Image 1 (tube, helix red, strand yellow):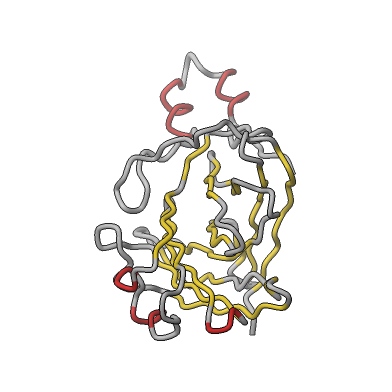
Image 2 (cartoon, one colour):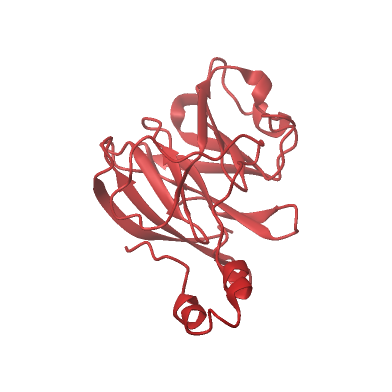
Length: 222
């Protein structure tokens, strides 16, 4: 997979730069300045090989604190479960294994109360076979502040991966891996008519070296 810069209109802009300089600037995608919780959007600690657009690190917190798990998910949470909280540009989630680690749960959100998910828009559950998900459990029902849909899904990176990058509009969101826990990621690349979404993903080693790249094609399960 090749991460493409979304500056397709750039050659046209150069041709008319004297006449329409401001229009070209307005049409160019902008790298997000903040994450969903209002914190500053920062680049990852290493430059990721093969990612040719600006890179924005998401936030991850691993905890056993049930107070950060919304009620929709908390009822399914085993005692002392390891919870992985993630906050990106347009979405946030909590993920944890269910009882006996026969499945994995997530609650997704597109709005936060401070740094916490008070009310989630989706509760996802995925069954595990040999500690691998049968499907990524795509959700497309969440909406951002502008009413636009945000798709959530899990990906399970290779055990050697330290970072997962997902191509967005003009930038890449970078997620730190969290051991064997699947990584809940977002995208706006979806087809609501067919209930499908595409996640352009690359996996990277701790030094940023590219390990794998692929498109995760997901469909809402019935």
